[in-house]
Length: 117
Image: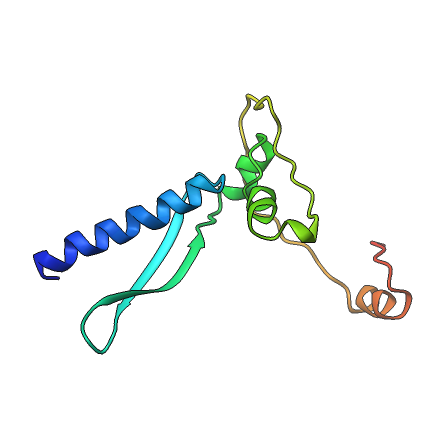
């Protein structure tokens, strides 16, 4: 990328990050850009970045999903589980396989209630 465009990209990225921060968001941010027909960069995607650590941070009291919905779509009234006082501890992650029996999905379809048998 030409040196001229690098400065433009950095300035544009900084403006978007400041706008998110001003609205209450802090955390990873995904900004994807593409050149238009004139060769200028345009943002084609702008979103918070969620990773495998999002669920762990929520357990520790930092609910990224709840924060984002409060900021950008408060009318949805999705619970924000962010705690005023952060929890100190460790997160243990592990893989787990579960069997979803066809008979259970049939019960779910008919009763509209999930029961694990």
